[in-house]
Amino acid sequence: MLDDSAAREMLIDFRKEQFRLQKQKLSGLEIAPEQGEKLERLFEVLNLNLTVKRFLDAEFRFSRLIGDIQNIIGEATAELIDPALLEQLSESLGEEYDEEE
Image (cartoon, rainbow, N blue to C red; front, side):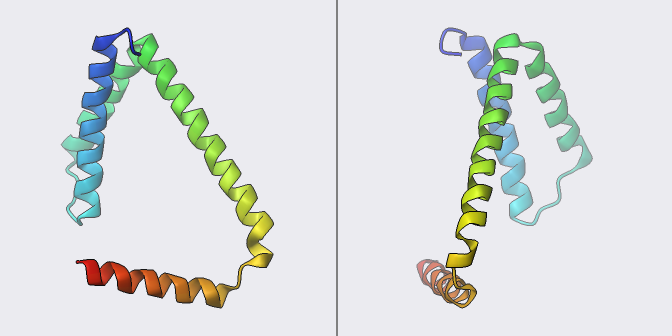
């Protein structure tokens, strides 16, 4: 990807659009069908570029590997974690977040 500036720019443009739609969705705004279709078309075009396709495939495999590792750690430590303590920690972090806003 470092040597292919066109591929890099296409990927950056795709990620910008992807993050913009995610931000829109997280802020409670509905995503219009046209917006979703545009993102799908961009993804299809990206996959025509072999460099970008390989990058996205590797990124997907890496993401899945990280998810598997998290699941293994979660299962291995599940018995060690006190649910009441997690609840208390979650509430405490939520209060800190509210204070920052």
